[in-house]
Image (cartoon, rainbow, N blue to C red; front, side):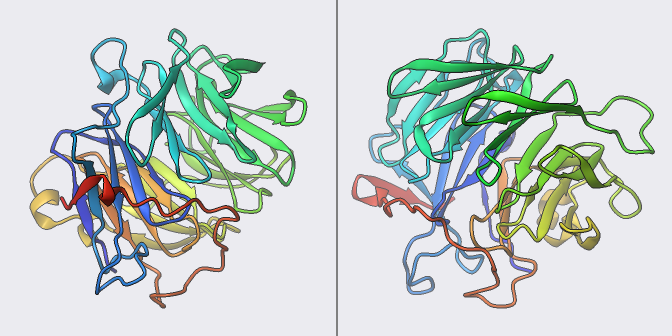
Length: 371
């Protein structure tokens, strides 16, 4: 298994981690409200500039020192809920770390706009999958604001949760938006009329006597037919009617709480990180554990043996290479893993994005430095 890594400064956690839609860069939002962008460049070892574990990507920095930094409200971004999203053409990212929502140009790193002054603060962000001008903003007051960036207006405000919003996922197949909240509820919304169609409480696992622990995240598979619901206590697969089809709770070799999980790009696998540093790979259809990756298999011994727990805070799946995923760690490291790769050029039954953005080359205006 290959696992190139790139480190941020120690004590800075990776809170959010996203691949760009064209699959050639990784964007991290860190606990200090700063973004870091790594990009695979064309080289002798990587002539097509694709994301690969054979070559480490480069950290892209502007020559003028410009950085993508979020606003914070109390001077302590560690305590804020960080969230971000990338536009379909990879040109922009929206992001927040407790302060205003910011729109950054991914090429120049410049702040293009700042909006939605807290309180309430944004806790989850998403672009509408069919219109980059429509931004979905989950708030810490339990509302979801549908914001039109072009007109600078809130076009709808969705009310259905009792606590902060922790996740949002779209299914164009079913014209649905599903939201999750700290109230352990799932809400389904019709995206044509922005009306709530169903609400359900997440069923805790049978071995859990108390309330669900940790934030709940939601992810639709690539065709929008099944919903992955993730919290510390369990992985669960739901259908479009918000009926739970199957679930899995930590046990045996993977007994630590779940820290993050996502579908692979083809929807056949689920990649999950755990608070003890392990990673589990599950068959999505059955949630049967396919393989377990011990922390010692990808975290260098100098780090794992240094005392303290280092674990994946966030897992991100490559947008069309089903065998590749990345993990952002509690110590600021990012690892790119290809544990199931049998063909360096293939291995994915998923398709590339229908609308890819231009291959923005920041090197013409900045300097790419590898860390």
